[in-house]
Image (tube, rainbow, N blue to C red; front, side):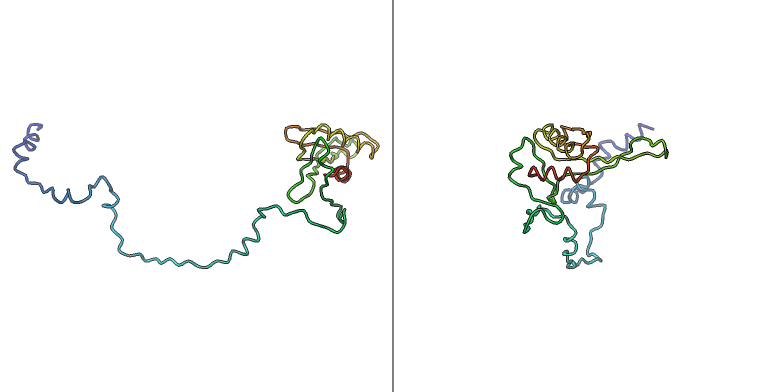
Length: 187
C-alpha cells in the first residue's frame, strides 16, 4: 500500500502535472494575511454615523473643583460660624497643622463603644476627636494640647499619638475646645 502511494508522487508523475504559479506569485500569500481571504470585502455600510452636539455644562457643574479656592475674605474675624484664617503666628511653633481643602481644621469626631453600664446593661459610648495632618514635632503638639485641655476642663484626658500617620486622638475633651486651642495658636 505504501509503495502504491509512493508511485503516485514519483518524479515522473509530478513532471507530467502542470502547475500554474503565476496567480500565486501575483497575489498575496494566504498564510500572510488569512483574514483578508476569509472575510468578504465590504462594499458599503448600512449604518451611518452622525455626531450629536452635547451640552456638557450640566455635567461640568457636578465635577469636583480641580483647584483649591483661595481663603475667603471677611469683614471681621472670627466669622459667625467661628472660623478664622491661619495667621503668621502658626509658623513660630515646632509643629504645624495643615488645613483641609475647604480651609477647615482637620478635626474628626468618632464614637466608639466603651464600658458596659451595669445598671442598664447597655454599653456606653465615648467620643474620640482625631486630629490629622500634624507636621513637625507631634509630641510637642500633644503636650501643649493636653496641658491646655486639662487646664480648661479640670480633669485629665487620654491621648494617643500616631507619629507615622501624623495623627493625635483625644478622649474626654469636646471638639470645640480643641478647635479653640488651634485657633489661638494661629493654625
